[in-house]
Image (cartoon, rainbow, N blue to C red):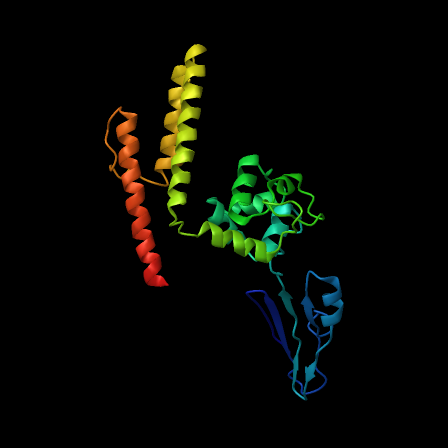
Length: 260
């Protein structure tokens, strides 16, 4: 009698031969069994059965152990961001692309490993149209509402309308005036902060914060095209900026007309 045992991958096989042509002998491994061992106990009971193959000269004892590794389950953690993605029909990658962050950050927020910051909630609200306060409250069982009007329920249509508004080329002359108004308000705010910093002997720190904002937040997204004069004359810079914005508006208007 001979017995050979070989381990191949996740299977163990044993073959027992009976030379006398009589009743096959056992190898000491117990009854011939084919077991499918799974992490799911119910599946284990369901698939546990006995297979035997015999003839006049040969007895084959087959013992196979197959280990089943189930696919990684999605996070069961709930969050307002998860609900938002479900309504908007977004994957984690797509939402991350909208708010300019990594997919891992979105995943960490949804699994409660990372707290949703106010700045991130503001980005998500701006790009999806959902209410920022609803996001921060994280009461995911409460239906979300729209950012523009908390009385309106947030739906996929609201998301699509928000994306369409963001993608609008804005070729109306009033759109350019809005840009000038926003920059004028920002200019006044910068001057106000500089005055306060100077009065409290923190003007050096103000310079530092301004450099960080310009380089890390603005220049990484929109590089300096060197189209404005390198001058300390604010009036001259503003006049040139108006010319460039109007030129860009006319180019966009022509492009839109060709597409229509």
